Image (cartoon, rainbow, N blue to C red; front, side):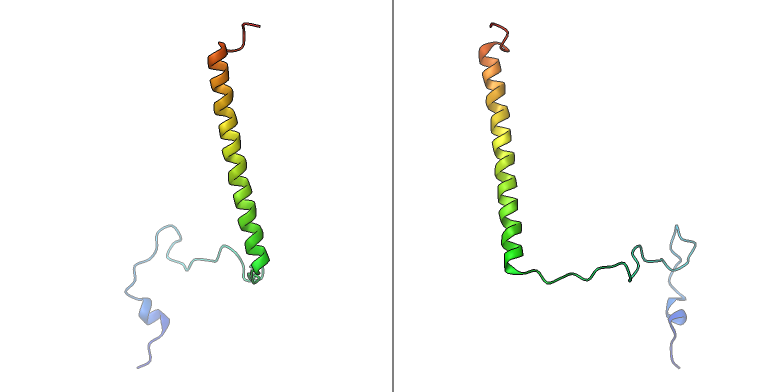
Amino acid sequence: MKLTLEDLLAGVPAREGNGGKPLTPSVSAFKAKTAEPVTQIDKTTANAKRVLDEDAKARADKTAQLKAAREARDGSGKNC
């Protein structure tokens, strides 16, 4: 006896939220892009951008801390 998909799925309970119907894919196969191979220069560029972004964030955080410390030291800068 050859089993069909319906025979195999007979004992599986229906899913909630879709009325027991098979789920439809959220992205059609036509719209789905195939991933292009990533070259070494692409990897290097991505890593360099990541490092630069992390440095910029650290610099901005340090600048904000120094500004807050300066304002606290000078009494909010209202003495001028």
